[in-house]
Structure formats: C-alpha cells, structure tokens
Amino acid sequence: MTGRTAGWTKALIWAWTLAIVVFIYLPSFCALLASIGASRYFAFPIAKFGLNWYEKTFASLEIHRLLWTSATIALIVMCVSVAIGFFGALAFARFNWKGRSLYQKLVLLPIFFPQSVLGLALLLWFNTLGLELSWRTAVFAHLVWIVPVVTLVISIQVYSFDPALEEAAFDLGASRWQVLKEVTLPVLWPGLFSGALFAFLLSWGNFPLSLFTTGADQTVPEFLYAKMAAGYTPMVPVLGTVSTVGAAVILLGGYAIVLIARKARSAHA
Amino acid sequence: MTSVTTTPELAERAGGRAPRLGRVVWAPGRRHALPVLALLLVGFAAPLLAVIWFSFLPPRSFDLWQGLSLENYREIVSQTYYRSFLWSVGLAVVATATLAVICYPVAYGLAKLFGRWANLVTLLLVLPLFVSENMRLYGWVLFFIKGGVLQGTLESLFGVSLGTWLFTPEMIVFGMVYVYLPFMLFPMTLGVSMVPREVTEAAGDLGASRLQTFREVELPLAMPGIVIGCLLTFVLSVGAISEAKVLGGQSVIVITHDIEIAFTYAQNWPLGAALSVLLMLLVGGLVLAVLRRFDLDRILGRR
Image (cartoon, rainbow over all chains, first blue to last red; front, side):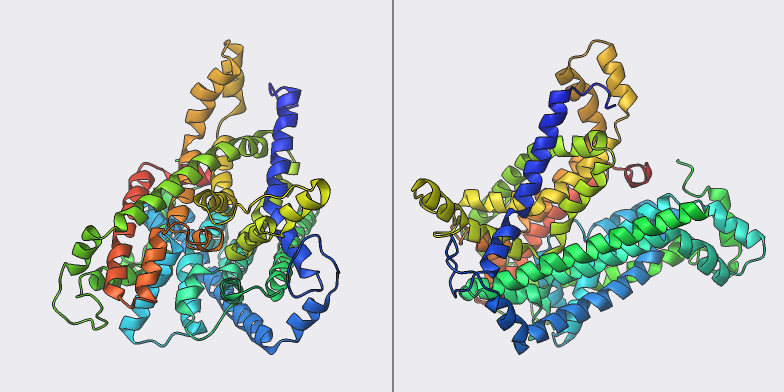
C-alpha cells in the first residue's frame, strides 16, 4: 500500500514518469532511425533502409583510431580513479578526523565546477608546465573530474560499512593487508564496482574536458562534435547509436552482476 | 552522529597503531585523503591559480613573466560581455526552475511510490548520462530539423508543415533541461526519501490538506536534496557549452562561448582567463555559500 496517495495521483505520477523516460530516449531513437537509413542525407520518413553506413563506419581506420584512443583513456581513468577513490572514500566516510568536513567539500568542488572552464584551466596549466597535449594529458584532465565522482560513489557504500568488522579482524590478529583483502574489499566491492562503471562510462562520454586537453589526438565525442559542426555524415548517428547501446549493455550487465552476486551472497549467508 | 561513522575513540585506537611521531600527519583519515588531495592540488587548485595569474597578464600575451595589469578586466567592463553573462545566468535560471517542476513528481514516485520498479526507472534515467551530451543533443537536431522526424511525421500524416524550432534561446533551455535532468532528479529523490512517511501521514491525520502537507511538511524536509539538485543543474547550465552551439545555433552568445572564442580564434588567452575568473567567482561563490550550510554525512549516509 502506498499510504495516502490516491489512485489517480499515483497513475498520474506513473504517466508523467513514463513520459519523461520517452522524452529521454526520443533523441537516441532519432539517431537510431538516422543510422539505419541507406542514403547519404537524412530525411524523414526514410525512403530506403540499409546498414551500409554501419559497414562504412566500422571499416574506417579513422574510426578505429578514435575508438582505440577513447577506450585507452577510459580504461586508464577507470583503474586509477578506483584506486584513488577507494582511499578517498575511506577518508570521506569511514574515518573521523579533523578537517574531514572541509575535505568532503573540497572533493565536491570539481563536481560542481563547469567542466568547460576546468578544461580551459587545465589547458593553461599544461601549457605553463610546458607539457605537450595528447591523450595522456586528457587522462589527467578526466581524473580531476572523475576521481571526485568515484570517491562519492564509493563513499555511499562506505557509509553502510561497519568499522567494527575491521576492528574485530585486527583484534583476532589479522595483519593490515589481510584485513584489507579479507574484510574491507569484499564488503565494499559493490561500491568499487559501480565506481569503476561510472568512471569508465563518464570518461568514455566526456566532451568538454577532452575538447581542450587532447591536443592532436581525438576521442569519439570530439569527432562527433567536429562532424556535427562541419557537415552531416551518417557516421555520426551510427557512432552515437553504437555508444548508446554499448553503454546500455555495460550498465545493464553490471547491474545484473551486482544482483546475482547479492543473491549468491544472501543464499550463502 | 549516526552509528556508521567511527567514534573518536575507535579512530584514536586505529591511529594508535601508527608510530607516535607521525601521528598528526598520518592519522588514518588524513593519510587516506592524501592521494585525492594531491590530485586536486595539482589538477584543480594549480590550474585555477594559473587561470587567475593569466587573467592579470597584458592582453594577447602567452608569456608568463610580464608585468601584471588590469587591462583584461577593464576591457570586459567596457565591452558588452555583461550581455553574455546575463544570457548564461538567465538561461540557467529558467532551465533550473523548469527542471525543479518537471522532476518533483518523478522524484516523489521514485522515493515513495514505485517500490521495486524504482531501480529499473532509475537505471533507465541514469543510462543517458553515459552517452556524450552533444550526441544526445544531436538526436534532437534530427528530431526538429527541416525534414527531420517531427516534420516528416506531421507532413506525411496531416500534411502540415511547420517552420523549424531550432536555433532559438528557447531551444537552448530545452537542451539544458534535457541534458541535466538526471542531475536534478537524483539529488531531489534523495531529498524526498528523507521525508519520513509517518510525518506526512500525521499531517494528514491532523487535518492538513494535500497542498498544505506538501508546502509545510514535505517541501521543507526534502529541501536539502532539492537545493543540491538546483545547485548542480544551475552550475552545469551556466558552464554548458554544447547546448548553445548544437541546438541554439549561436542565436545567443553565452559566456562559455565568449571564453572559448578568446582561447581559440582570438588567441587572447589573458582575456579568456579573465572571463573565466569572473565565471568562477560567480559559480564558486554560489557553491560555497550553499554547501557551507549542509552536513554531507546526513544527506549521503542516512539511508
């Protein structure tokens, strides 16, 4: 039962929510439509369907390089940000220390900061240091924004973590490393896992930071943007559709893994 | 304090394991915070300082070591940059207000009504966050453009033809509402879920109308989440760069666009830096003013 909310209010809220979901997916649907047209230019209703633009896109060496650059950046960002974010989250939510409340706000600051300005600031900074821009500098730029996000995501898990578990393990004579491996990591892993997912996907889709920090290298969102500005090619909707579907598969797959693991654990217990 | 955080006692004991000498610096919390803080120092604080420094260099210079001047700020004041600022802030305010209204019913549903469906709905609404925003905006271009999905449908079904709605300020707001919806929705949901059901029921039992309950009970209790959501959407919209370009077709010049121009075509980095500093002051001041009032432990940890 849902308390006092009347039936029709509930129906209205459901209808509104479904409308929002449709609204959210409408442009992806349009991109999908545009990607399966056979002609060079988009016109609706589509006269002739065909997958020829998918073939062309995946045969293109330029696209291969883009995907490779984006994937490299996203993978490195994922590994580094989970490692840093793990410790950051313990400091955020687990330990009580002087300066914690200030630290929490500092961690949030980059998240609440306009990314385009952050990208430019990093560009200036790299230039000041005399660093040459490439995908490596983009990795660093992504980290500045994604590490705080990951820290926050893991922190939410850490809040529900009972420090007494660690204490007990220490009292039973476990070493610091053993406690980390046998107690802390297993309890926190759903948080680490979702942190990793967030890191990968946010880096993969990031545009404003990449725009200013990749130099001569190009990521998928940058390529899409350049093509949008310079003139239409059906490769844009093709790549857009592929990345939407890819993100969906990764996210739903990850969600399924978490659900299965949770079920297995509760069956175990 | 909630029970999930360590008591000072426990922290003390954990700290006791470290050598006494390094105890102040190496208290466990501080030690674990170190990597993040180092990253923020090198990747966030330092670049911002670089921007501030650059903003005081003479116009069009790239060399760091020169006499400082206020020339860039003088130019900003004498030119019409205030218009871009007003547009940016105005568009962001409208987008934020629209989102607050649009998202509240959904947040309420997610927090109170949907039960086990809430996870699925959340997942569906999170997913687009991971597709780059310019791609999603481009989907709308395909929808609204001449010969696009909307017009094509209308024409073939009803024989009506409309002019395009693209490339207007309204369209920029539309794009912001679309892209930043999750940033409003999820903090708001967190806020609404902090309202205990018993309290709203009690209000009803005491004879409050639905509207009264909403205004005097639900809204104030859900306020932290709502404020965080508004703050996030406002900040992101003020700093947005794709919406005005992809959907707005540069019908309006927003401040981020001015900044980008200064850095790219105009090759006037100090001017761009000065504009960035003003934007940072605006955003940073707002964020700090709002965040100061919040106890993050309570918002994030209370579940």
